[in-house]
View (spheres, protein in one colour):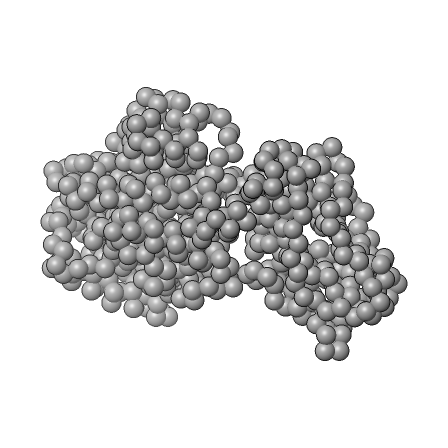
Length: 570
Ligand SMILES: [Zn+2]
């Protein structure tokens, strides 16, 4: 019951925090420890474990050197030191499968440990990658236990459990065990639970930043987030102001290889509520402009599959409540990683047996998410998987390494060259040359992206070229380059105007594989579809180029490209 009262107090606090000028003192040193994450959907029927003695005000001022321990009914949990010893022992026993590295340090200097788990772990295999992370919120200790147990499941099941063996052989699994070790150590210091959520970085008036509000994706914009340093939902002085967040940000950024984010799926383990949550947090809109409809379908399908495996409820994160600056929003919004928040259990501080059962019921869901990294669109059917999960896939919603004017030979003015973004509409009379809508999502690759004051403003006037990152084609036959295209021109166009797709082989040889030419007719901008065989380059590493030319002296040409893909071999 006390837990219920505290949960209610938390909701009241939450309402206070979003009010301008509210004085939020929860979690401040010397104050009564505040209620934990309001994600908890505490049920009155779920009898909470009786906690260790509650912190007194004198005990809530703690230094990093204070002894901490899990004892008695919580003895199966790991302190930071126990966690480090455990994962080091596993890595030492399985050097072929596990390597450990630091991604940086916490505010108080604790190493943020990351494990790489994969067969032939020292090699750079190019396998699809999955990220598991725990410990964001200090008091949600079960998330850390989940990551530790996953490491054990992967090494112990390798060679005997078919699902585990497949994941280890075909994926690179990253496990970040505890993003907030300063917070979790503080939370258990002096033999009491402190209901501590944030990190332990001093701020303007108090201590700590909520690490799940500090990411630079709609940072501080909406919902359950606070600009008050004393708030348990404090967003930080600036995006990435927490060193723990900066460390994980740098690691994720390092996984972009040849323009492509290698991490395809991720889970951030929290407590509590028994939910599998998909992005976004920041809006209640199901398919906002920064998510494609197909991504939404696929990301929700995976969540529902995981929920069927762990018995949780799957929903969009904002259906729980709206917040902003979260890790999962940042992972999807920035990199299109299918990132989930799993809220484990029914409340925090559950005792040993409950923790062991709750982590166990998430085992197959986590393994399914690792498997899904191979083709996150697979649940939408074979046709979608063949289209989206070949050697290349770019919907142009994020930057994936295309280079404009790669040879320095473009003659088009800067305002007319290829650019990625949302095009502005342009017309000649009632004919739309450059539509403002694109085949998928918000953005495409277009020439003369701004509308200007007439159709001729920001038009091409010359040649512009754009080149992809290297694309390693499979050796199999039947791969096609597919893309959506738009080529519009005024009535004075000639065959000097064109839009071309070109394959650049590894030796630099360029081959025109598709072309549209201008003509003496007013042609409006409608999006077409193209598919060209790449069999001549099977097994090779190529680049794709798109070239648009406005060769006439006074004509108007607009070109667009979207959804460039290399299909799977047939
Ligand atoms: Zn949490």
